[in-house]
Image (cartoon, rainbow, N blue to C red; front, side, top):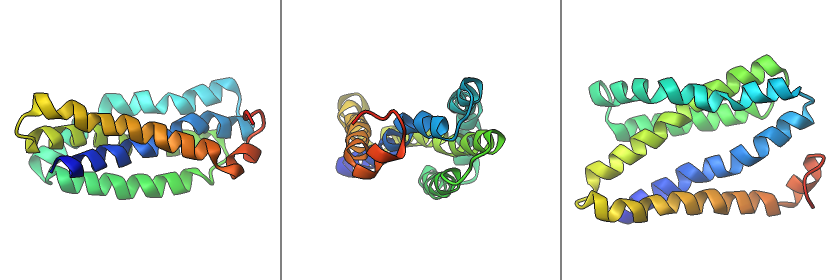
Length: 158
């Protein structure tokens, strides 16, 4: 069970590690103003206020946490695909907010799932959560070393 939870953390944070560092560069490439970029980047914080409460209620009352995580994964993948094609500031704000409303609760649900399935939570959770950090760093490095990423964004360090 520990390696499956570690893989869950790795994959969950790998998505964010590939998306978050390059998001502002993409917004800059689209010609958004600093205020519009700030609003688009603030959607993560806005969603963090509401989404875990709603997802927690859904996971506690209607669906198991595992199914909620699966739904969050499918929806976040679809929203990332859609977000890649958006160009207007209002559409980007809406798409980014929708993404974080779906992706944000997955953190809370994956942590709750880990604590529910680990026999000694205090002893093993740190080792499992470490794989989330490794996933973030690994995906960031892979995207940074990808040749296409060096030519897509102006000002990207070569």
